[in-house]
Every structure is written in structure tokens, then in C-alpha cells.
Amino acid sequence: MQLLFTKSFVRDQAKLPPPMQQRMDKQLALLLENPRHPSLHLKPMQGREVIGEIRISGGYRLTLQITEEAYILRRVGSHDVLRQP
Image (cartoon, rainbow, N blue to C red; front, side, top):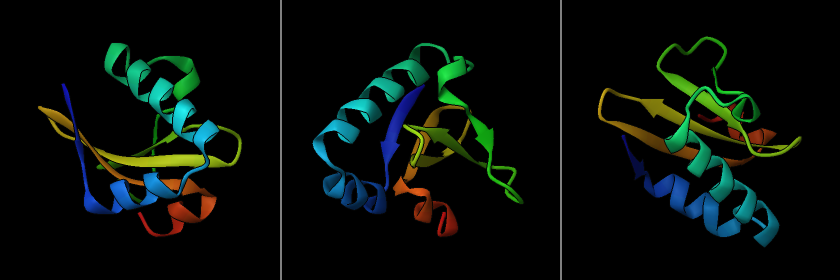
């Protein structure tokens, strides 16, 4: 699998505090290694079967679309990002 980044994700990522960027990088490495790793808390977003969310920390999440070839990273940020997946 490969990671693809939307423009929205890149914009959101640039706004993250450095510690959250480091945690996000760790979670993305885990995603590539084992998408079922328990610390990812990967689950479908409510009402959206093709878009999932991953926990970065207690207050930060990232959203992604999973295809057969790639993880398309859509948004990253605080819980507010989940309101606009």
C-alpha cells in the first residue's frame, strides 16, 4: 500500500504543532506496517463506509479513504476535522 496526500491534508498537516506531526508520522508508519494495530483505532467514520479515521492522540484525528492500492489521506487535525471529512 502507498500513502497519497490530498491538498487539504497537506494544508492541515502544516498547521499541526510539531509534537502532533511526530505522533502522526508514527501512526502512519504503523498503518503501513499493520493497519489493524490497536493504537490506530482505525474505524469507519459515522455514516461513511469508505472514509475512516485514525486516532493520533486524544484530541487529534486523521481521515482517510482506503482503496485496494492506497490510503488516501484526506484531513488531519482536532476533532473539528471530523465534521468536514
